[in-house]
Structures are given as structure tokens and as C-alpha cells.
Image (cartoon, rainbow, N blue to C red; front, side, top):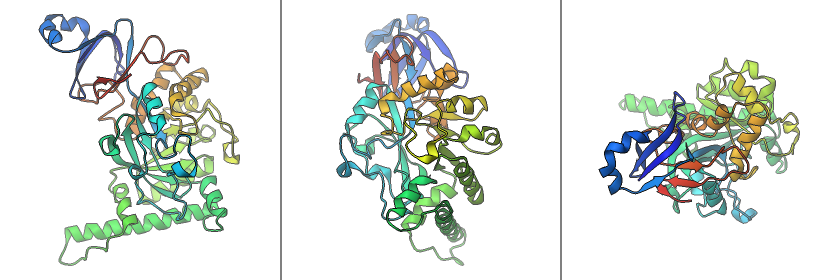
Length: 393
């Protein structure tokens, strides 16, 4: 498959824009891309493969939503489709999002129609440690064939959600102190388990292998720095608690929501946070810790040079409105380029999946979306969506 005569917005490191460009798709990957005029001498190749003439259209990498609960909270369902919170135990790192996702949920189709081809789906924020997150495609029927990376992170949550969940059960944690203490307890046990495993591998004669523990086993990728912790935090003090805990255990981390981070943005560049997954910004202030919520947040973070992604937190904001969120961020001061990067390459890099998605580069997944005009214009819908190199919309 060749797509020709399109304006290519690559979002590569140089932010290259190719006027009148082509892209060659093969076996679900981007084989090559460049200027369409370079193909004039390749007419034999063009005649042997399907050609999509995108004259007048702009081509973007498939969009990435870095924080959703897609497929874990069912469309039009209540308890029957609510598989995002195992609120019977506050510490559940062993839970895998892929075991709860329903790929036939109606919102997958709506995401794909909006050009969103990759999402991070995560257990909810009822538990201080909630489980293993997954990066998945929005196309497919079987979750095992939709996985980009799993686990892609471990979900942790601070603030009101764990407090209110377990206060209703008259069970710990009911304070921020207890939430952090439970995290530390679990991470301490996990790090000890990791060290015992390391000792055994390095010297089997003098060390015993620790007895298998599902919770500790799930935390091993954190301590190996194969994946980051994703900390749900709204209030500024919760943000700094997340940073404090990540430093104590020497783990990589991402901040999710970070609703009050605009109030402390000058403090954040000195930290080693991989980035902030910002949003949702199209919601009401439904609880006290959201009282300082502002749609200016992405612009403020971006102005401080903090890696910033824009998220829907679906179903908090329905996933098909991801680009509307980006448009609002532009209206509130974020540059158009930064906003589009915040739904393409930035979330891919923050979440460790930029080898597969987020930009138009040879070797990456052939997930593409074509627009006639500005994708941030609310009146514009994609003219075409390609998934794994095939036109699906």
C-alpha cells in the first residue's frame, strides 16, 4: 500500500513536515516515506501495489491516549461491566488490565473512528496499588493480539479515591498517611523480594530462591526499571508524595492528572519525572481535590519544558474527544504543535512505546489518520484511518 500526495506531519525528533509526501506501508509497518516526486521513477512498484491518493489531505500518526480505562468500564453498563477496581484489597499489583478488557466494547470503535489507534488502559484508582497497565491497539477482537506492551506500568493512587473507597468499608486507608504507608510497605517487601531473587541468581550455593509471591513478582519490573510507576495524584501535596516515594525506592515514575501541578510547576523541572499525563480537562470539579482544575494546565506545564501528554481518562471524558481536549489546550495557551505532539509522540515517549507508535518513521506501526484541514477544528472528522497498514475507516 502506498499513500501519495499527502502533507506528512511526522512528529519525529526534527518535527519534519513533508509537503506532497508519500508513505509506503508493508506488513503492518511503515516501510519508507518521503516526497512523492521521489516515486516518479518507481512507477512499476506503484502499479503493483494498492495506491491511495491523498491529494489535499494531511497525514498524522495514529493518536495516542496515555491514560484511559477503555474496555474496563463497560459502555452502557454499571456493575456488570465495571472491571476496573478490585476494591476488596488495597494492594493488588498482581492484577493485569488485559484480563479485564473487553475489546468488543463500543468505545473501541468510536476511538478508532476518531483516529485514536493506541491507548494505555489501566485499573482504576480505588487502590493505593491497583495493578498492571497495558498499552493496546483500539482495533482487533482479541486482546492478546492488540497488545503493544503489557505491562507498560504499575498503577498507584494517592488522594481522595483510596480514602473514600476504604472509608466506606471502614477499612484502611482512610488518610493520606495510611495510603502512603501501604505503598511503602508493599514496595519494601517487593524490593526485598527482588534482592533475594538477585542473590539467588548470582550465588545459588549460598542463597535460596524466595518462595513465589504474586504481588512481589508483579513489582519486579519496577525495580528492574523496565516499566515506571504511574501515580494518580491531583493535589500538589500528593504530587510531592509520589515524587518522594519514587525517590525512596529508586523507581521511574509518571504523574497522572497532576491537577494542581500548575501551582508548583517551577518545582517540577528539577525532578526526574518521565512526564505528566495531563487531564481530563473537560470535566466538572466533582470533588474537593479538583477545586484548582484549569484547562490552562497543559500550556503551563509545556511552558516549563515538562514532557506533557493530554489524556481523556476515558470514560471521565469519552475517548473520542481526545482532540477536542487538545484544541481546548491550544485555546488556553498551548502551541498547536505542542498540543498535537501531546497526543502523538509525547505520550508514546513518556509511556515507553515510542519504538512502535507516536510518529511517522520507518519501522513503526502503520497506524495513520488523514484529515482535510486542521484536526483540532471541532468540525473536522478524519477522512480516513489506517490501522496496521489497512484502511479501516
